[in-house]
Length: 154
Image (tube, rainbow, N blue to C red; front, side):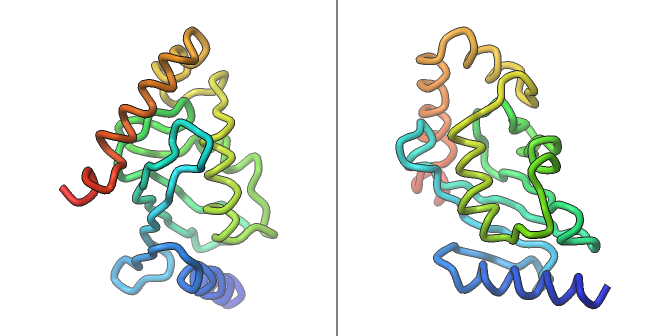
């Protein structure tokens, strides 16, 4: 347990020292909010999301829980709860990853390459497969309405 606690502290400190805006919940290193910017060259570009992260006691051997606090239109993210599909996290998670990997690799890859065959948001998955242009338009509309600087400050 001491090793897990030390690893959590190390990973959170790396994240705090990075360029990300990080807020600990009640100074608890196992629960935090991170501002995440949508990757360039995607319909999510320009979006800013507040991402809730909870680190389990078994971290890094068990993956963190990740959820988007403001709405996002994506096949693998539940529109109402903001939860990221657990299969997506658990299939790729390894103790070799750290918190920076989540925000620099994992989430950008998830937004770049959605998997409509294993959806949490059936509407987004169906639209993506049926009409990619309409899907991109709806993603951009959600970015403007829920993930723009003005939407976050409202």
